[in-house]
Image (cartoon, rainbow, N blue to C red; front, side, top):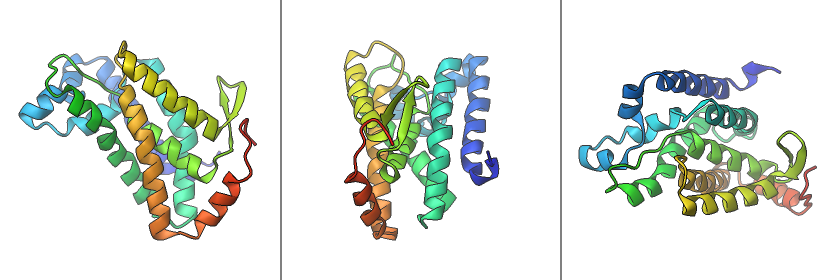
Length: 216
């Protein structure tokens, strides 16, 4: 693999790992940087919408987010560059704005709940996943390394899962961020193409017209 082809993805993974490791062993640091809507509202600590996106609950949470970011993020970094869509700058813009946008729902829902806190890169990672799906909707994804499905089918299952888990609300993962990050990533990419390279829609439509729900 040529890691020089997608340096932003590698950098984002490195920063996530370093900050998450710091958080694993420093509860005070986590307390100051985690998404905490109650404090955001009262103390205007808006930076938490960014800093919380570089924290993770544990090694498993960190691994799955970074594993997903590596495979989809490198694709987006290449797509945005190759197709003249702003390259690395636009990729970073997508990532960081997705962190904020994906947290807005949680903020509005829990701004008066002192006990609600959330963390994780899931909102931004979800945005990257759905942005990549625009360019390769029937590309193969292997669940658990063995079950082959298309990226589009994965997207549908992912949204259903996020809505279901969000309604249950029985864990500390911000599932609302997964959902809204996904929607934002899709809209961001479609609008970006419409503004900068509308001719790409011909190829995207042609690809969508040749479905393969279990991946090509």
